[in-house]
Amino acid sequence: MKNLLVAVDFSDVTDRVVAQAEQLAHACGAKVWLLHCVHEDPVYATMGEVPVVLPSPDEDLSLRFAGEHQRLLKLATTLRSSGIDVATLFEWGVPTYEILSQAKEHSVDMIVMGSHGHGALYQLVFGSVAKSVMHETTIPILIVPSETHKATHAAAESKWEEPMATPY
Picture 1 (cartoon, rainbow, N blue to C red):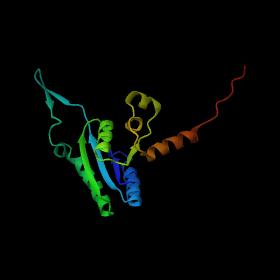
Picture 2 (tube, rainbow, N blue to C red):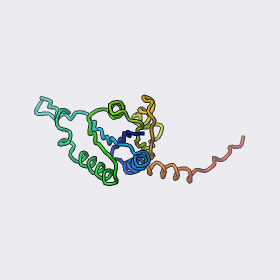
Picture 3 (tube, one colour):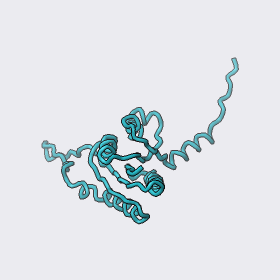
Picture 4 (spheres, rainbow, N blue to C red):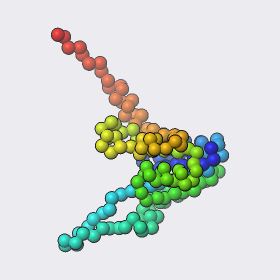
């Protein structure tokens, strides 16, 4: 493995994703392509009865999303300080498409990303980026679960009670 694509969304699983990627990069001597994708629907404002779209996706992303861009740069700096070759990718678009596109463009050998572990109803309504990427690529994927997902399932299992039998 020479190239790892590490997709981060700055959720509670991001630190675990980066830590796993760091271990893999050290073990394989791989370069890390650190990707964050911003995607939002256009914001509409009105001036009287004239709708105005604010702002355009064509604007400089690093200015429009300065906080997220700085977080990405900070993660890259942390990885570099441990001796890993890192490049940052700050992209606009649909996360699944951008992950697959960047993986192809940079000839990555593995994709590392997190999973929030939402329930079946959430997945049915909103889908899952991790699941979509898995179904659309042949590149190996390491999916890192969030700690809150583990805690939620552990709590649910500890509260489980065997249903009482209903006599006939």
